Length: 229
Image (cartoon, rainbow, N blue to C red; front, side):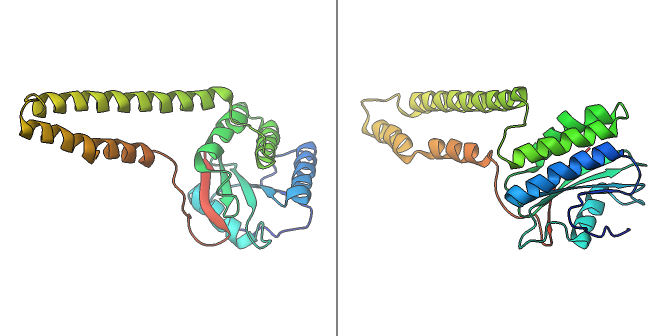
């Protein structure tokens, strides 16, 4: 792997000669402004080949060896493009893993990079992807509305299903154990179920487990998180 030597005010390293001068200038200007304003960096690197490595491993090693974003913490994103393998990856520095998770990185690539790569237009793909990442780091919303709505609908459907199952379960238990309403044993049985909140706790735990959880991805300058396409 050829090491990329960090240069001040340079955010594009086109080793595979895939980008024109206008693209390099546009990306450099936008990344320089982002770095100056909020201290976050977006670095674009193109390589002729991954030399048999997985792009995830290549990006992680390149990130660490090149020292991107070393300003106390790695608040940097690496956009790596492999020419021969026709692959792209967003590698996330550990200082940004809370803002750019794997899912978001993947959706940004799907929306802004992949469609133009399929047309062979890497310049537009890079410009639009860097712009989307930059706007997201600045606090703007760049994930398409239909994706967010789809995720919201899925969450709503899951909640409704949980409630239906819970209600049916309660009815069945009441029918089985509360049928002898006049019986002291039956009454105590029904009360035990309701008061114990066994099923309520179970469903609550299940719902909570479906959310996103925190945690690091590993050591070094890069979190190891990101997305590849």
